[in-house]
Image (cartoon, rainbow, N blue to C red; front, side, top):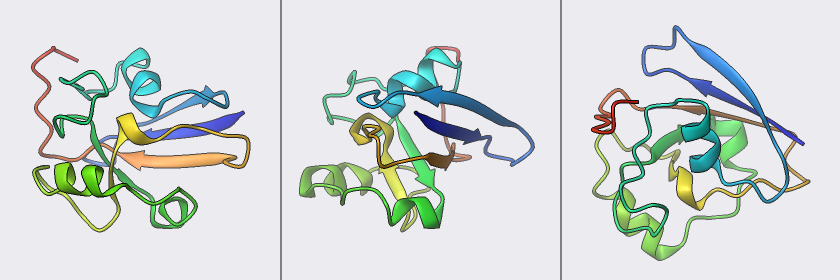
Length: 111
């Protein structure tokens, strides 16, 4: 199991959820009510599920694909530790993961 910490853009709110190996970070976030739109439903055709991964956790994730890197170029507020949450799959090697929702997020689905 992986403990996932979602940190709000202003850093004032932290919510923790537990994910199982094989869970997708975007799905966990949406099920928790996080403001990640995921317009393309995980097809890597948008950047509306962009998150900023804690630096220590970022190093433990598999590297982003070239296609994901291209989509991150379009993400508002992208940083060196940005990833698309639809491309992060939890596995048994990941005990915890902390991500911040960027301040530039605009969720048109009302989350």
